[in-house]
Image (cartoon, rainbow, N blue to C red):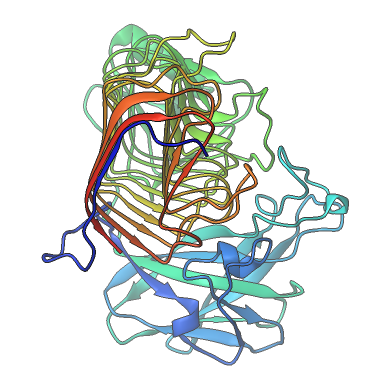
Length: 493
């Protein structure tokens, strides 16, 4: 690595004097499997790439092999909904397998949890294969969610391998329990998709009549092409109650949109960068708002392009994707992500990229902000990344446990980014268990500064950063180019 042009490092060590709440507010409580009561096998913690533990939260999990093996959790807070993070074996053809696992509460059978490996398990090197013959198995984990009978503190939830639960084995990372509110009421001045032959027809009618598209409780399947949206408000009864399944993918037309209180569950188990298999893609206009969304099993949650500005994504959960959680790309500016939770993304969980390639506008992204978000286990790349652009902010986020080729936070001129300018502010963030081996052939840190394709001309101001349990150094510099100015203070480790 060439020398930094001008770096001022005013770092302090030690612990924070006052505890700050960083990251997103969480409506659920997490119960790690390795801390529960079990007669199964607790797998020893490991960060070794291509092992299930390396992709597990806390780097450990529990394995159930035999009939009547179980994991039992004691409930601490009242709840009526459950998320389980699991791994079952893939099929020999890579197309996935299905299985069940039994759920009991206080010794009473409740239901069989329906599991599939269809959206997990990929092989080989980037851009990946779905066939086991390519080797290098990874991306092991997926999640299921379900309502459960009301539980209260002291109740016992047991996951047990019972009769008919016939996967070769079950790995359990954790469960999450949550108290879900009743469905929202249908808004006034709305059109229900139940009254139309398809979602597209309802959207077009709502736009013409200046009404809200109402997605009532239940699963509503869309199959076919991406739906072009602009100038319309789509609302569900809540992310636990209203779901769009199949191919719930939307292309911006340059007009602002509003989506809220809704889940989008796709069926993408591969990565094809020639196909925009994203929940929301393209030019989303000026002033789009996305709130209280739950997005899974697509390539990306959001991939925005030139023309998108003043966009807001808030209070949402984006998990189990093949690529980025959100990428403010190609001139997207003055846009914000706040109070969102990202987990198991197959590329940067959050990114702002200003590409200069022929396919792009070549315009910089300006003044994008990532504030108060929680990120867990991106299985490729970084928690938060800035590639070029001007005057971005990364503040009050928490990033936990990257898997491969990722720092917790990356600031970079890589991927032929438009030159970085202005000030990049990184304030009051926490990074835990990030960094390690990477695609550049060197180990990267929890904070990764990479002058890859050009000098980094922005002033980088890093104030209030806690870094713990990095796989290598806490902070690393890479690249053959230089940095104009870096100031660091209040660094804790």
